[in-house]
Length: 117
Image (cartoon, rainbow, N blue to C red; front, side, top):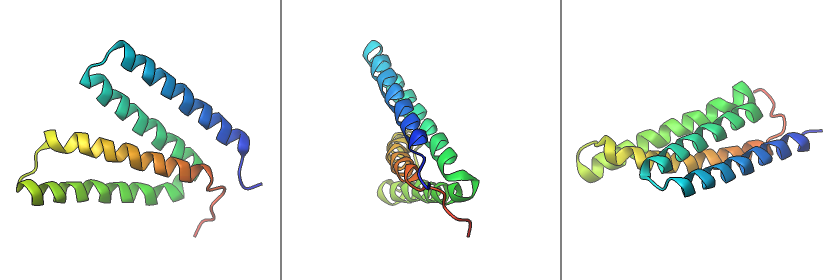
């Protein structure tokens, strides 16, 4: 069996619990710092679960593309503003990282047991 449905179900339950917890925390405290921390937690949890699904070998490819995304954002900011400002870079970087981590996590759920090349 290439896809372990129990494993997928357990990870989806973890995602749903984290979603409920972040909604609860954001309802209690509506500050911008809470939004940032929730974004960081989401990205880290999705990357950890993707790492578990993909294994050590295949995780290198999405992480390398993540680094290319970070460098691309730096070059876009340099071209647009003619300077690099961390305050403008980090929110955009974490928003794109969350989107990318979500895509990698969904792809890793159905990757099965990828062969070593």
